Length: 123
Image 1 (cartoon, rainbow, N blue to C red):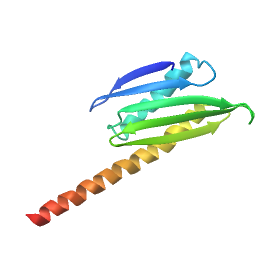
Image 2 (image 1 turned 90 degrees about the vertical axis):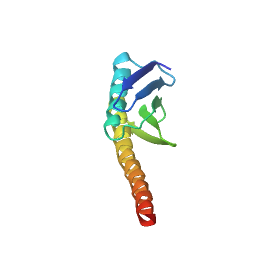
Image 3 (image 1 turned 135 degrees about the horizontal axis):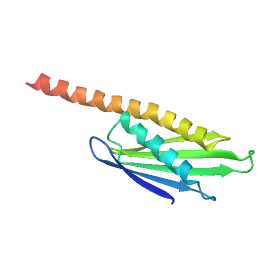
C-alpha cells in the first residue's frame, strides 16, 4: 500500500488508497491516480472510499492494468483499464466508473420518485 489520501467533498470525506502490485509506483503516478479518482466525486458525492490497484502483465508486452473500486452507499462499483501506459489505464477506468456512477445516481433518484408517488397517492 503506497499512498493514502483523504479529500473533503461537500458531504464528507473520501479515502483514496493506491496499491501497486509487484513494483513500486512513482510518486507522480500515485498523485495522478489520487487526483483522477477524486474528480469522480463531481458526479456523485456519496463516494465513501476509493481503491486504486496498479499492476502489469509481462506476458502481453507489459500491459499496464489499473483497477479502481469505489465504495458507495450499499454497494461497490468497479472499473478496469488496460493499456501500454498507466496514465491511459487510469483514465479508461475512471471513464468507466464515471458512467457507472451516473447510472447509479439515476437509479437512486428513480427509487426516490417512486416512494414520493406512493406517499402522494396515500394522502
